[in-house]
Each structure stands twice: as structure tokens, then as C-alpha cells.
Length: 461
Image (cartoon, rainbow, N blue to C red):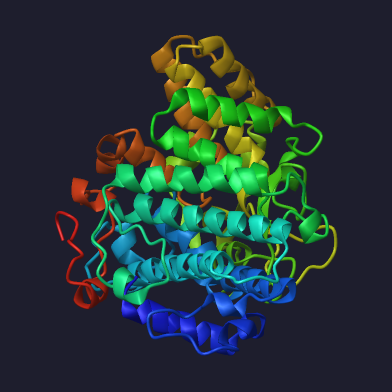
């Protein structure tokens, strides 16, 4: 995107050992990476490792913590326990164009996206020395990461620039593209990623920490759901659900453990060994004597009696005078290094979501029997009786409820669900006294608009 992002990219490559190969040659002013970097499989493997290092370490605050916490705070899931100038604008939906955390998400996502573009460009411009198989897989992984970044950008900010090049002059003058066009690019990239990736996890030593073709499929089914392409959303989710040799729902207590069978794509980090930033920031006692974030009363009320997700994914703390009990997210339980089997990895894609994607796609195609079956799979795992929903309207309402409980505090699902189903005004106007419709999109950071005068602003800011 804008120039400050590229300087940030350059700085990252200078300081990150896994990026060293990107600075071994002098690049022209319009690019940070040239095809001459990739003259052997060894340099390409170093570049791939560097891309994931950016995601898991350098940009971890954005790619893991902020993408989860900030949309959850903007929705009706969590609140910072005390007044905090950083989180209050999200709680109150009162963001300004100079908010530092929305800027951080914008730059972090475009920075990661730029790294993916650099990987793709370096391979496509190579004059030789690279094996066809590794080149094909690396381009596919780059396109997956690019699609992942664009997915969150379009859901956070609405119309956004589509950045598919490393040319700074081009990127610094991009206009915002309509959301439909952004989704079309996401879908193209994910189809290409599916075709080029391996079906297993062999290039990550069996760990699920590198996306494979099924990770691309999982994000693609979500993209189809968000664009109301019900038939394709159902078909791809079915592919994942039926691939039982690799993917199965776990016991509720094991859903976020490293390399569990429900995980489709996880991320590990040498900085956060066996624990996650969610585990640090959500868990009581990580950095303070009380929970940082607590569940809203409306979310607490949405849990049914006997729901194992409440038992396993919510924790409590009685504070100060032992009269106030706080409930806080507890999906990720580790807050310090854990190298045992109880270690956890950041899990952006998992099988539980695919059942709910297929349920919603089926319900919208009036296959209510199939939708109900998928709802009940999730409810049975949670220790609940089958749904009583019968009509299409009731089934869709039941799916919204299950998505709320199953996916709470996971990477903005609730925030995006309310917006894509046109439910944000009805729900959040009750939960938040100052809710206004324009708050459904975050503002385009003013610093980015100063650097690129072609960027327009969202309404209301």
C-alpha cells in the first residue's frame, strides 16, 4: 500500500534473520524483492520461512491478537474491564480516522500482503534454478496469504485497494475497489492456491502450521458464504467434512490444542512457544490481577444451560470483595511457554466452522433437513439436545445462535456475521446506546489517505 508500509517491510527484512535473503541483492526503488533473489530452492525456502515469520512473529499483534480482540469488542462479545483509551472507541463504536489500532491493522495486513506478493513476484521473475514443484507450492501459499489478508481488509474496512504487485509507485496510488471485486480476487487466489498446494502437512513436519489445499478450501467456503454463493459454499464445506482421514471434530476441551484433528490451519511462533497472544491477553493473571476482557451480559445470557462450550471456553474470577464475578474468554488456556501436548497454536481455520457454513448454505437453499443435521452435530458435541427449529426462518436463527456460541471471540466472526446478514443495526442498537450504522465499517486511516490521496473515506467519518 502506501510508502510507510513498504519502509516497514524493508525494516522487517533487515531485522528478521529468516528474511536475510531478501536483502542480499540491491532492489530498484519501486521494489523490495527482485527475481534475482530466487536463484535456488534454498533461497526460496528461506523466503517462504520469512513470510510465515512475518505473520507469526513480526506482525503477530495484528495477525493474531488485534484481528480477534478488536472486532469482538466492536460487536457484542467482550468489553475491556475498565475504561481504556485504546479500546473504548471500539466498545463505543466511536472510532476516529486517527485511531492507532485501526492504522495498525491496516498496515499489518497490507505489510503481510506485500510479503506474499514479493514471494510470488520473485518466483515468477526467476531466470532459473528453482524446482517446478517448490515454485508451484510457494506461489500457491503466497496467494493463500494474500487472500487471507484481503478477506480481513474487506470485512473491516469495506471497499479496499486490491494490492497484487510489489511496485511501490502502483501501490501508492491505488483506488479502493468495490467489495465485490475484492471478493472476486480472494476467490481467484484461493482457487489457485487449492490447485497448487499439497493435500497433507508434510512440508511442516506433520504439524498443521502451514496451509495446505484444504486450508485454501476452508477459507474459500467462507468467502462463498459471505458472497451468498450457497451452492459452492456447501460443496466445498462438504469436501472438508467428508475428509475424515484428516479432519474430525475434537472433544470440546481439545479444540485449540496444537495439531488436533479439528484444526485445518494453525500458526505457531518461536516467540510464543506453545501459547498464544489470546491466551496471554484474555486469561486472568497474564499481566494483571484481574481479567483484561470480560464477556458481555448479552453473550453470557445466550449460552444454554448445560452447554459444554460454557464449561470449557469460559472462565470466571471473583474479584476484590468477592461479590463480583467476571466471566472471560478461555478458549486458549496457556499464557506462558508450554511444550507439552497441552500446548496451543493460534487456530484461524477449523472444522467446526465448516459445519455451520454448510448448515447456513443448505438452509438458504431450503435443504432444511440437511441444515438441521449440521446444527445438531455441533450441538451434540456441546452436550445439547437437538435444535427445535423447523421453518427456514427458525433454522437460520438457530444457525446465527450456534455461530455466536461456537465462534465467539474468534477472529471477528460475530462482527462480520452481524454485518453480512444485515443484523448489525437491530442487534447492536440494543446492546450499545450510541450505535450508528456507519460504525459497521472502520475508518480508513488518515495517515494512509495522506500518503495516497486516491483513497476515499468511509461514510460517517
